Amino acid sequence: MHPPIPLSNLLARLALVFLVLVPPASARAEQVAEHASLRLRYGVALRDGQQADVGPGLTYEGLTPNDLAVVGMGWVGPWLGAWAGVQREAFDLKEGALRITGGSLLRASVGPRARLFLGPVRAEVGAGYGFAQLPLFGSSAEPVLARGVRHAAVVNGRVLVPLFLGLKLEARGELPVTLAARDASGAEAEATGFSAGGALLIPLKRASRWGGTLVLDFQHVRDTVTLADGTRSEQRLRRVGAALELTWNDFVPAAAPLPPVRVPAGTLSLQVVDAETGAALPGARVVVGDVERVADAQGRVDTELPPGEVAARVSAEGYAPEEARATVEDGGRAAVEVRARKLPPPTGALRVTVVNAQNGVPLPGVRVAVGSTEVRTDMMGQARVKDLAPGPVAVTVKSPGFRPAEEAAVVVAGQESALSVPLASERKSGPATLTGQVRSMRGGKPLAATLRIPLAKVRTRADAKGAFNVRVKGGTYRITISAPGHLSQTKSIKLRDGEQAIFNVDLFPRQKR
Image (cartoon, rainbow, N blue to C red):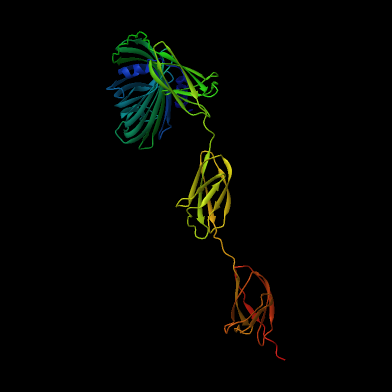
């Protein structure tokens, strides 16, 4: 036996297709006004199933008429309500034309319900209690219809999609969560199942308080019961039927169409021109209230406004913003010319900070020349120059006791650039200082050596610790160091004015003969 074709995917796709169709403008208003509905259904059921037990097992199928149902819903407000439904399922088990057994099964459910409107689409969700009688057979050899019972918490839902010509498409489903299940003798069992269906709703009659609808209905049901002894019964139903649905609505009288009302209005004609040349400025932006418009090729903007005084804000690239005021009269035309002035060329600023290069302390009162502009630094060592043309600019910094400094900075339009200049102190020239120590290579013993610098006419002697200190002018000198019992050394050294140099010498002892 092949499983039935699932309908949930098919119904979902159909719903998406019909959503693109334009519903009547009053569809949502009619749904909100619905106060209660009652659906009376008659149909036929195509049933197939099987029961697996200790015997050879049993399979069955057949078409059964007299499938009756009644479903009622009531709403206490736009969103909340309740539902109750009862359904009778006729059942016949035949072998050929011979009827073996039969009867009827009952389903019922009740609970609260909520509805939600998503544009023209109406969605309903319910939760409550469900009772169902399910088919069982005492023996597959001698089948007799018995009725198992399932008590369940049910969750169900329904979606109504309006179509054209007042038609509606319905998709619905129900899932029972078993609370208790028993066979015909009262023994415990297990039961599962679900149902899904859809319908096409065709309006028959509409009145101020009630309406009648023909419902072409389809439903797919699947139930499974497992007994304690391992017997398993499974059935599938596909129901097709027609129903008459009656709805009661809150009376909403149709509003009489109002005669058209003329709204007073006048016209504002505004033209934007250059203040110096009088040339039109196309593309200028004109804001009146919360509405912005763009001037045409003649720099003109025409707009319709209610009577009264209005203010228009005008802006154009490269021009200063302007504002114009005018009085608009009912049926009149107010003409305004706005003369926009060009903005001055963009400039930037430069902030120069002067500090002492040795310790980073700001230097006040320092002369700072930026291009042709000269300023002095304040107590924080800063000087600001404004209205500078964008681009590179030369900066010269001078202060007594410090070496002059020249720097380059880049000025950015509309911004203040920053430049930090450290100044180094001026040092006066003076003699160089040469210090050092003379030691013996044998054990590092200090030597009271003699130092001679012929070019500087210097002859001196190291002290008992071998230390010496000589001051000479800057230049390049040859120095000869000698000590008793050691070989003399001559070295060349270059000194700069004001420099302090360290010159350590190690002498080799003479070899004894």
